[in-house]
Image (tube, rainbow, N blue to C red):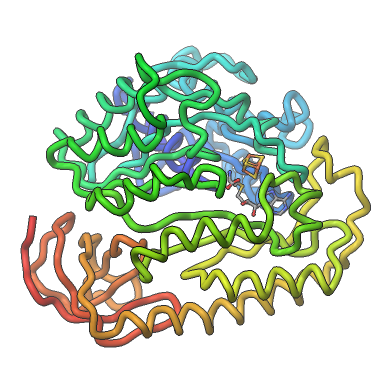
Length: 435
Ligand code: SAH
Ligand code: SF4
């Protein structure tokens, strides 16, 4: 069958979609690029905010109207349960995140409608990859047990479970053999790797830093990234890995959510503003160019102007290289959904715009400091905006573009930064080829 997977949401969903694609191809189906050519279309949904869920459901509705065999997978399925068929009466199948491995079987049997909400992990689904390229996502920690007040993720992605280190290492070795150079390790709170369940046969050292060190030994792997982090996990051992392992990228996505201690406590984030800033300081102390990016929520219930200003000032103090700003969206069943959503839509939008403008200015300031320095860049391909240029990312996950040279995709090049924008570094190739 000709098929296509549409993905909404985070990198975790991107990875799950890749796994489903790989499994369907292995079962003899054909992946197509164009929706018109597809007989089967699967929508991988997000539900972290209401708008995100609506987009995925809307997309599935259109596909049903276009008479495709339509499946919905991902987080919205787990949240809605059987109600998903009330929203989409002619949907063929719906599969929760941890049941994604069942999709090839469901398609083979073709008995619709079908709903799978189970938590039965299918090992093939965890390892399956469409690792055609040089970059790959690797899930190391599933689910989340943190239960931040606003967050639906623990309800839809289940309990925290860390994959055994040996399994992760074997997967990354297999990826390296297929030409993968950069891996990104995924987990909702990935520094909790090995906290809930043991992952190493003995208890030497901290589980996650130890995993990074083991992966750095694999030949062919040149870069190791991971996301998302939490200040509690920024231990001295982790800082030491960043300092001493050149393959481990000097970038941390460290969602802060708010700069107000009162709001942080209400959210159940388990750190204060001061603790958050201290975590960053340890990293920037040994490398001022260490990239820190973040997520922020504006308009949390009861967020006053003063709380908001605290977030603004924290963002300046932290000097984020990039930030993702979200307008609070109450999610049914979470603790904060019981509170009155009292910041108006207009005010949320205003706060969002203020933080975006701040970030533009701050991003430019931080990037300008890199002009005149040489960045190591992994070549990703022609730049989206200007195909005459090549683009890639440096270790800090910054987008770098330069006038096209003959550097092959997937190779590493040294780029001298000559100009900077808020979101992009511009440069020229110094040494071609590389490893
Ligand atoms: N596990 C990650 C976050 C996953 S959700 C972490 O804790 O670091 C991605 C981002 O969506 C969150 O960091 C948060 O900023 C935002 N988010 C989550 N729930 C939200 C909600 N109810 N309303 C608005 N934004 C939300
Ligand atoms: Fe959600 Fe908090 Fe878990 Fe992140 S750590 S997924 S924000 S509950």
